[in-house]
Amino acid sequence: MYNFLSSGAFVETFTIEPYSNGSLNGLTFAVKDNIDIAQYKTSYGSPSWQHKHKSAIYNALCVDQLLGAGATCLGKTVSDEFTYSLDGENFFFGTPINPKVPDRIPGGSSSGSAVAVACGLVDFAIGTDSAGSIRVPASLCGVYAMRPTMHRISEAGVLPFVPSSSTVGAFANDINVLGYVMQTLLKSESVVSQKIETIYLLEDAFNTSDAEVSDLIKDSINNLLVNIDADVVSITLSDILGEEATLDMLNVNALRPLQTFEFLNTVGNWIEHESPELSPFFAMKYETVRKFDRKSVSDSLRLCERYFRRMSSFLKKGDLVLFPTVPTVAPLKHSLGDMETALDFYDRTMSITSFSGIGRLPEISIPIANIDNAPVGLSVAAGFYQDEFLISSVKQLLCEVMMSPQTK
Image (cartoon, rainbow, N blue to C red):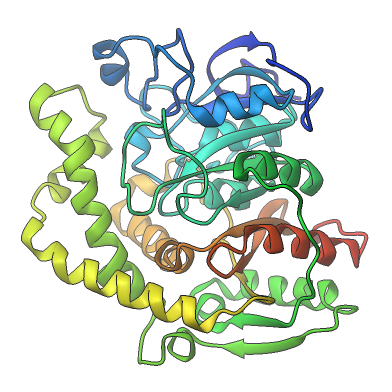
């Protein structure tokens, strides 16, 4: 239905042929426009950034990995302004069309990459994720996506954002394609199947979600697990950390202050020096962010490290954690211009996405269900550095049922 132009997914299109043959032979891909491609400017979702910077000299390493494995690059995709958003509505470059529900947002900040895949324009796409920028659009657009363990994929040639939690990841319409892509980027020799021992249901995330989303995902999980020989345990964040804690605390007290500090040191310093044109909504957010007391980040850093160590200690090999990727279906376009609506969406969403952010965990979002055609994603996370186990486990879960998303 949508093409390269009408989808609104692309900043520019071109063809870069693969360097050699490999596991991705015959596949096409797109690249989020905060990732360098030689001889092209990287916009970072901002015309001012694009204008003030020269074309990239080299490809980002992750792009070279994909070209070297036999894939063909077809262009660069729209990103939210400075990737500092989860809604996918870019004031300058437009809002890529969510093909499943065109009146609703695609999610961001890797909006164009998710939409390019959802529209079937490419076989897979790469993006980046700090607070959900891959997982959120994957859920809202109804595609598969993976955020890997922190720093397992090279970020050479990726524009700096929040180094403590930013990572490269990928989208695909097919779990096997996603597996091949991630295996290439992770430099995995193979994905060895390992028995799933315990499946935890993170009740905090279900309770944070809309009741309709939570109930539908739990029904879908029951179908997924019907033939899986593993212990299924409902658990809370307090059980994992061994202390009273909520997902909101992970976001507000730990991850968000650290990410704000890092954003001010990367993008913020450039904005202060260059005084670029900013979109009205971004300018309003930035005015709030720039008041952040940078001295307070030490408390956040200590919390992040403590929570990371406790999560790493709790999650053993063979463990999976299941929860809704996003607490709601995609909001209507332009609805997040209302601050109260935006805060509800962002606070609840980032509370859930902060779980893997703090834990530096690999996470895959599965298009598990639909509510009035609006996609709903199920996230499956595994322990730190258990990326290959996560990929093989998700394939195993999906093989147990001839899965098409449940509808309500």
